[in-house]
Length: 411
Image (tube, rainbow, N blue to C red; front, side, top):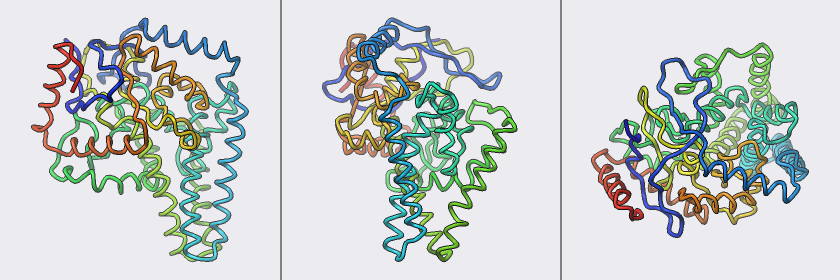
């Protein structure tokens, strides 16, 4: 059996960046996959992966910097947590609807900053070399209404192992309300998804805070990933966090404000959080410059290594925007994050030129949008393309395949 079918809507490459290579690449299998489920298979580590790690290791050896336990990360943690507490306390004592609205937006952005910076590095083990420090940082997600336990299976395993693989990466699904992956079924109303999907993004946090995590507790699965029963300590944390979130989100505010004010400011804060989280993710993976792979079939052979898969299914954006990088916890450097998830994100801007250079030398396609605006436009075009009936898509795939067969760069 040959290489899996590539993305059916593989759009134009960014000018000035390497064209798509002809060969695939490496990586791990699938931990926690259910027996009998076809999984994504990767080739053994290649010269590209070895060279990449050698160069990054040399960077840390030459600079003397630690991969984790960074003082500037500790300072950033204090700042974003201070912003979170300050906006929350301010909202409790808001004296007008306008002030409440502004503080609700600030609270939503502060929660996003904590998620991007503190919990994300903590859950990946990138915050510190000490496990208890990483665990403490990770638990910040539980305080925001999520679950650090389920997040590790959904994100660390399902998404990072099977990035942009249909049926395996649950982060590229919209629950039947939209289409982000070429292998997903098409419905007539998807033709309008580029208009309504922003509302779905805004509802993301509200859904997992009020419904999603309870559903995860009952189902314990994400695509092919089967989640083991929660140990007693995790169960205590899970239910304590549910109660704590309801107290902080509704109980305490109702002691200071009426129910309408509390409900509206909760919706505004959580919508700000959800929209920010969703858009940042989509700009890195759900754009025309990223590879998508169809659902694996049984006994399908490996066709490329894991590290190449990560580079080609991910796109960086706004790499020169320092304030944005600070706020997003380096997640505008998603390629570097996917390759080195256990490295603290404060290093990503320095690692990006190294990664891009190694990709260029090995013919691995590395893509980056110059700005947030360029990335948003690309995501918009992707939403439009994915909302069209299937007959409009294969022509693009045929053109891409023909260009690759001829050895020419994609137009």
